[in-house]
Image 1: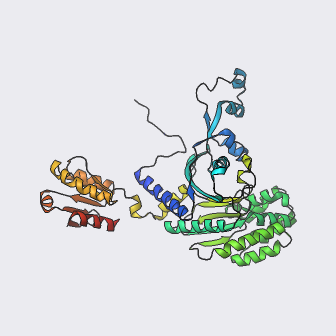
Image 2 (image 1 turned 45 degrees about the vertical axis):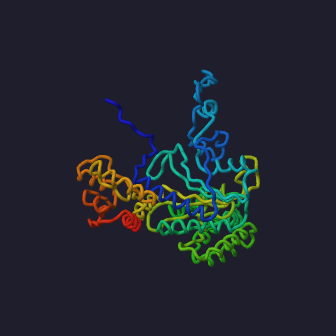
Length: 454
């Protein structure tokens, strides 16, 4: 008996309905990106390990999927090296390529390689899969899509403003109520500075970023374990627990940071961004506990939470000052966001927010009664397709029940029938599969009726 086929853990198959839903997500994001002048690029699934290694930290390097060299990949490896079983050393000799871990490092590589061709500021978006050799679990996969947009070569805060407008527009189109959280790396650096713990900035932000998950007492315990004094921890409390409107928070934090030039610069940047974001349909909130991988970001940072579903961040991003420095081109500033397509997919499913036409493939199925009827229907089908209406004819002159079951299984909303009387009248009978209503229509009337339903 043949072994049942399987797919690698942490990967998924997507059927037609799932793909229709996913394409609705990708197409919506793609359309909004294009509205704001972003241009699409794609990079290879594989990058050289020289490009990838050392860009994600030691833990990230372990999660890279490495690709064995072609041909006899053991030819340059000695028996002693194989017996030593040094995984990192062997990987360096056996593998020159790896699957991309994210879209950011390949984008940085792309900018450096194509710098002479690019018009700065360069606004790019990228919607492609990435791979991580992580332990698969609920909501975490080894293969998943990222939907990134970045602007490089500009320090203007208008870029941050437009990215927040993009976030607002995308989720408004999806019908998902969200809260957009914003903070600034400079504010966090200023806080660490004024409490006398500038060298602990990463420890502080990693701890307070967990406030929602573990609570204030556990955050304080973690801060103690990281070496902060009781006095420093006490100074942090009113900052961590800061409440009120955005303006009230900014006023308070500006007073706290009055002796920190860096911190005050961060406050001014947030003020500017918020002052220009006056017409968003979703709430934007200053959240001083938001950290988002602080080693990477240098200015404004963003995170988006769905309000009606318990799920983690569904979009995030921020400003970085040296994207291309890892490849020898320092000083090129940028800002970007990334939509979590898989989490957005889960939210739309839970809230049942997919428009009907987004998951409908065929709009009308023509019943096959035989050769004569098929010859009559084919020109009509071609006219419908020319008008952008998705139409198909059942390939065999099977029993009516079988053909109707096919339409039901594919959730096709209309069925068209053309027998002797319809052919004689130059028309077809259109049946609405939801209501059961039937209409006798000419080809042009048929096209108009189907276009209205879509």
